[in-house]
Amino acid sequence: MLNQIRWHQPNAEVNPLEYLDFPRWYMHRRNGRRMNEYIGNELDKRYREYRTDPHSKRTKAVIDLVFQAYKSQDRASLPETLDSAFRLFAIRQIRTFFFAGHDSTSSTICYIFHLLASNPSSLAHLRAEHDLVFGSVPSNAASLLSSKPQLTKSLPYTQAVIKESLRLFPPAASTRAGKRAVSLTSDTGVSLPTADAIVFIVHVEMHRSPKYWPYPDDFLPERWLVDPEHELYPQKGAWRAFEHGPRNCIAQELVMMELSVLLVMVAREFDFRECYDEWDRSRPEVGNKRYRGERAYQIEEGAAHPADGYPCRVFMKGENDC
Image (tube, rainbow, N blue to C red; front, side, top):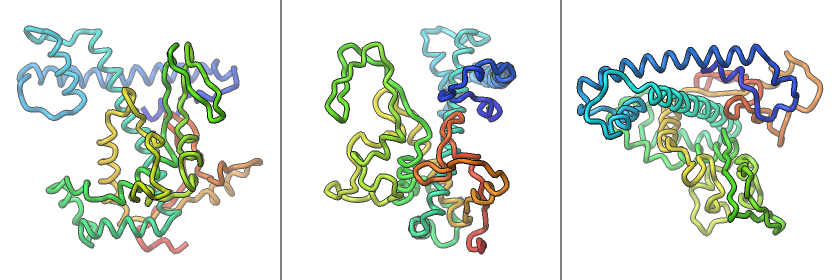
């Protein structure tokens, strides 16, 4: 999957000759076959286990949910093998889950630690919250989380850090199919019919628009903790990291929990420092390397990722003396 992402052609590509990149076609096809084979074999294996005891209490893993949906299709009994059309459909959906669950989350992890390293007071506040909830010994956090997973709900500042990171660096955008009876109104009051059009919602622009966000380019986790009367309080519908409505992210609660657990386990143990200056000295290029003053600007590589793979160094806490 990672190799597939590296061969991904950005939608913003304007060079028509790039579409004649035959090695890319070959690698996409090769990687696709390998992923289909791996997931298909795992599906077949798990399906054989499922047939032996379809009423057992299983986890709500994606594959188990696939089998439950398969069983619910008015079947008197489960066949020996999965229907080929359903099997192919399941493989494609699981591939989507893997991509969405890995690529966008990994990008968000980079940006969370980048923003915390750039804002020491926010990092100190986050660590203080973890000390308060889990005690001052970071190594005890794993056992506490295992015995009391509900503690992730007792981390309001951690949740605010995650939301603010997703506001500044949303890993994806979204589209909607236009309808004849639906029109949008521009900021200047112009009515824009959407019939026969695709409406592209650019999250990064909406999340940094001064129309919706005071101090839009500032990292302010506090905006997620203030009262509704406060100027920083987010406007309804302005934050769309997981989108809204029928196209919202079905795994958003899982993502928030994953990122909370990761911060609890890592933030008090390690310090992160970006190394773009070092990277740029070793690869001198002419031209601007910043966008909105940010060297770690987003580029399309599957989901949106930090430019140049985010070169950085990781230190044990307190050992970053350079």
